[in-house]
Amino acid sequence: MQDRRAQLMFLTTALLALSGCGRQQAGPEPDATTAAEPAPPAAQQEVAALPRMPSAAGARAFFITPADGETVSSPVIIEFGIEGMQVVKAGDDTPYSGHHHLLIDTGLPDLGQPIAADAKHVHFGDGSTTTELSLDPGEHTLQLLLGDHRHLPHDPPVLSEIITVSVE
Image (cartoon, rainbow, N blue to C red; front, side, top):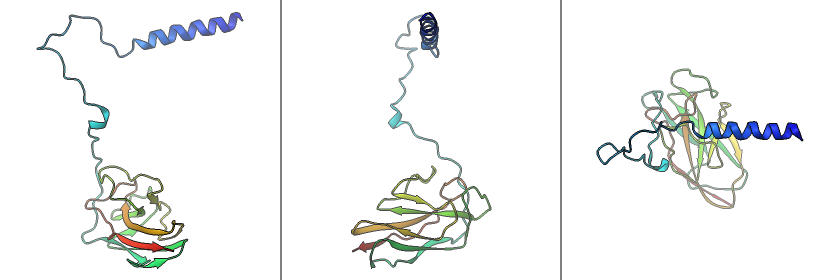
């Protein structure tokens, strides 16, 4: 019981000491001429774009299969094509290279930030150029976006046209 009390006292003291971290020392109250503007909410603060790798002139990504407007059954076999750039695994920073990202039912992401990894942004960091994808019945849009070794789109971005497929 005594050890437990000592631990609680230590933690309480540590928390009280830490709660003052980052505070300015007391001083004169600011007046209207010295008051700083409050920082904008986090949602309004702009995230700085990261430096992007250059793409080769005329480089493009495209779908080999399926074709735009095609009716398919799930799982859908999708083959990616590329011209003017080399497909490599994520982490490989060979100039004029990258790996595919498949955008499903979504628009282009922020081109100055790494491409998200979720159900709408499928990464092929292993250098794959084909996949089998389970899609619900209905109409779906697909687009390819090449990412560099850090999953950042190139400058200018290497991407495919948006295609639409109907899944039976």
